[in-house]
Image 1 (cartoon, rainbow, N blue to C red):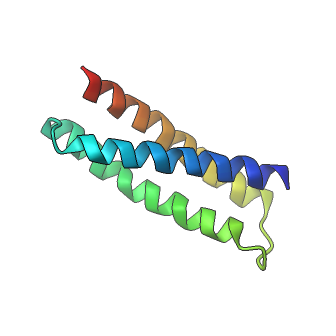
Image 2: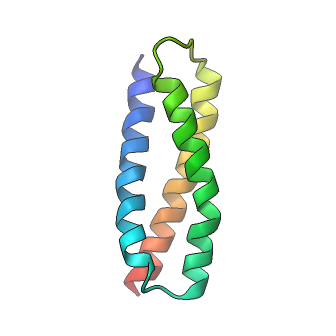
Length: 88
């Protein structure tokens, strides 16, 4: 399913970006740290849904993938905002 592959790629990109930000976050201001911590809950939700979607034994609905993609896109935007703030 193409939608599964697209979502898997999005999750992998988010994981890489998240890992890179985590390395830089210890030098960041408190408000950046707070924003990162608040988005961590959504990361765990997306990674859990990604595991469900990747599990071939479960039938995955397009609605589940669509909802997970919405959360993943929100994560992506927040990670980009945090990355920009870390670069300032």
